[in-house]
Figure: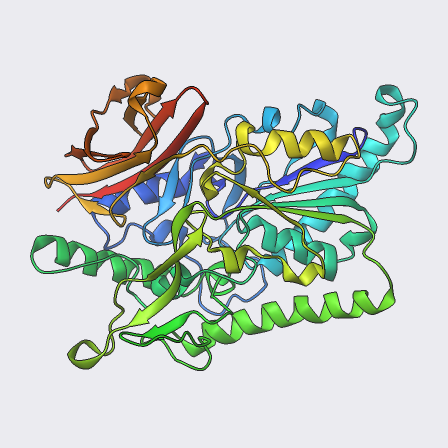
Length: 460
């Protein structure tokens, strides 16, 4: 309702991680693109941390929400939250709480931190609400909006940390309810595609650095896919990751994932027996973009390696079958036409927030199937080598197509990109850019639509 406290929980990468006011993760991720050897030392965690807070020098401060694109190669991207307040329906300053946190840590620990923060902020807001909403029908509660993996912490807070008694509504935006195959690739040391030549050497060094770093991150283990998501090359059946081991994937990480999911499931079952859930759930998802939904194990001489992932419908990051929030016992899905990285944008979210804050049910199918999709090669790519990006959409030149690209954090330096048709409703552009993180955006009118995607370019 309009008088409720609005709490936003960003996803993995969505909070700036700082030490002495300096953004340590931004510095480390930039170095990762040039030299993988020790780039992640500053943002590493000690082994066996579990659900505890790290001590110095591993502890980092949660700064503000991310405002520019960032990514972990082969795992996840975040385009930042520059227009978040507008997307959330412009709540008052006093009733808006952006919850920044250390996204490396266990979602259990983050859920406990969220509990403490919400308790303080809700007490404060209830004392102030009369001045802003004197005719409100009841005391303020919480509208919890969670992007991507932030939804894992948000739902854990509600069901395992007593948050269900304070919540009015949970809204998740592209949350991997049952995990991501990308997390398994990362922990198996095969997140970034390799091959022969210099690019293969760069990929091998990057994979080793990413794996060594991610093995000690509780959040990554808790993203492992717990659904049929492994197939042998040439086969037709997917199996659970517990039944078909992935080469290089540590058994300890899998045990962490199972324990995390089981704790949440048991809490849901226990609460389900005691009566109806006291808060509503709405989950935004998409099926418009090819998305990794199963790991493919190489057969024959390539045994022990992972082939290209099996793709299926999803939001470009989370496949449809992982986005489904079956733990609710209902159908809370709201299908949109946006990528995971854009689900916290004004276009994707505002209609839903407006309805929820007015106490109305959101539509089951939201505005946003835009008919325009950018398709990149599997991220990352090598500097000094041209790569092709594709654009798919109907009648785009007659819809005032505009396409741009810019280096992350330098939007004022954006430059046009020229796409040329090669098949009906399909266009290509060939790019060659310097190392770094780049953003490409395509916009059309009649009807309005857009897509935006980032790509990491490695120095060879």
